[in-house]
Amino acid sequence: MKSTFLWRNRVLLAGGILLILSLHLISTGVHPGDLAAAPESAFLEVISPVTGAFTHLSDGSSSIVRDYVDLLHVRDENAQLRNELARVKSDQARLAELEVENQHLGELLELRDALGSKAVAANVIGSDATGISRTLVLSSGTDDGLRPGMAVLANQGVVGKIIAVSPNASRVLMIDDHNSALDGFDQRTRARGIVAGLVDDGVILKYADRSQDIRAGDTIVTSGLDGIFPRGLLVGTIQSVHREGPGLFLGVKITPAVDFRQLEQVLILTQPPPILDDQATKD
Amino acid sequence: MRLILLFAIFVVLGLAFESAGARIVSVRALIPNLIIILVVDLGLRHHGVLPAILAFAMGYATDAIAGSHPGLNAFMMTAVFLVSYEISTRLMVTSAGVGATVVFFAVIATALGTVAIANGFNSLSGTGPMLPGLTLQAFITAIIAPIIFSMLALSKRLTGLPDGSGRDSRGRER
Image (cartoon, rainbow over all chains, first blue to last red; front, side, top):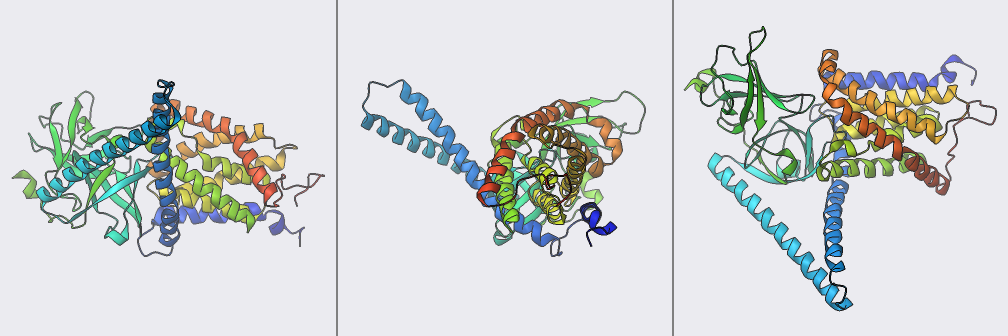
């Protein structure tokens, strides 16, 4: 048995089969309800609480370090006072954090009211584990009514869309990911294009007509034509426009309105926007 | 079963650390790719079909929390496992230094491979600005790889698992 070709090369053969299976998953994609979606959802469900715990732990650790540095300056105080001071500082930090969180949630509520659409708020508990893609992990999932394809917003503007969900967690593909694309237009000139991310960080407006008068400083908003984002949401401002060289389109770089690193709470639109036709963006 | 449980715990902790760390540390390159270290350890020290499936599962678990194409990390981790396995079958000794070297190149290769498969091979021409950060991440991952290998070896000893190269004293596969 052990001398047969299959047995001697079992690892390579198994690896080959697994590589083919991976390629099959990549090419066909994993859709909600698929057999292949179940383990992915289960992994997300298992990992997200641990990720949340790590995030809380790191926040707590930095608070402890700050408290310790403060205590070094009050050596002459007795242990009771130092403990008291640490406790008060910890409470203060927690209250300040709650205040900031309340402010963010309040702003998100205002945004939800302004949009007039059904929406839920969620905490950001993690980022893309590999760093090659630009994704976020949220603390809400299907139990809160989230589904893949829903729009994710911050009070500053568009964040991205949901690509995977589990009962209590979900993942967001941000607009600066190289696989992201959304329909947008220049608010001043009404020139349309596709807002897409780049591999090496950054966001561009693709397929913007060369004849359009697009300038640095112009505002880019969503067109509503993609059926995901409502029309008129802020995407960013134009950083630079390149007209040099041949080609049909302009080279337009965008500075996103949202600082993705500072995101703590986001708003997810659980109701799809009304479907617009191409004419609507010209009005 | 013990091997699966041990690696499952390491994978959950590793992915949680990477995901939470990426939110806290502003320079993403400073966060090591812990999953690649685990896969390289599997490839170098555990020869069999089960470790190959484990490597694939670790990649698929990574897909659950990273990337936009399910199956991409599973593909990359299986490939890293096979390369590590092939290296270990051709070397007399698979020390931590060899493991760290494999980890260094695996981090760079998987990142570039991910971009190439997701966006087409033409997109590799746009990866120039990525390379300094990627090299730094690969270097940091390689530096801490021997520590993770030691932690894995200790955990395997504690759970009664063999932590050898998967070969007997004459270099034959077990």
